[in-house]
Amino acid sequence: MKKRIITFGTYDLLHIGHVRLLERAAQLGDELIVGVSCSKLNLSKKGRAPVYETSDRMEIVKALGCVDEVFVEESLEKKGQYIQEFGAHILVMGDDWAGRFDQFNSICSVVYLPRTEGISTTQLIGDIGEMVLPATGTS
Ligand code: CTP
Image (cartoon, helix red, strand yellow):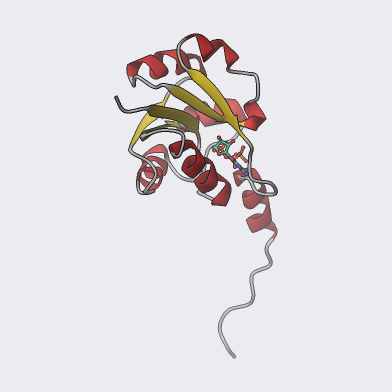
C-alpha cells in the first residue's frame, strides 16, 4: 500500500523554503498531496490576498517533481475531512504550527518539519517593495 502524505499552505511567490518543505515531506512516503489555500482563506488567515491567484499557485506547486496531487483548501476547519478524503497516512506541517494539529494523531501521524530560516512570502513582498530599481534607458 502506498504511503500518502498530505500538507497545506498558500505557496504564494514560490520560494526555497516552500520547495525544501515539500521535498522533505515527499521523502516521508510515496505520494505527496498538497492542499493549496484559496485566496479567500489566505485573506482571512494572513490579512492580505496572495499575489498569485489560486489556480496559478496550484499549477506552480503541481509542476514540482516531488508533488503528486494538488487540491484547493477552502477552510482551515476541513483538515480532518481532507485527510480522510485523500486517505493520507501522514499530515506534514511547518513547525510554525507545532502542536496545533495534534488532534489529528487519531486519524494519521502528524509531523512538524522545521522551516527554512530567513525567508517567507511576506518578507519577499516587503523586500521587493523596498527595492530601488535602476533607471532604464539611455540618454
Ligand atoms: N515554509 C518553510 N520555510 C519557510 C517558509 C515556509 O518550511 N521559510 C513552509 C511552511 O511551514 C508551510 C509551507 O512552507 O508548511 C507553506 O507556507 P506558506 O505559509 O505558504 O509560506 P510563507 O512563506 O510562510 O508565507 P507567509 O509569509 O505569507 O506567511
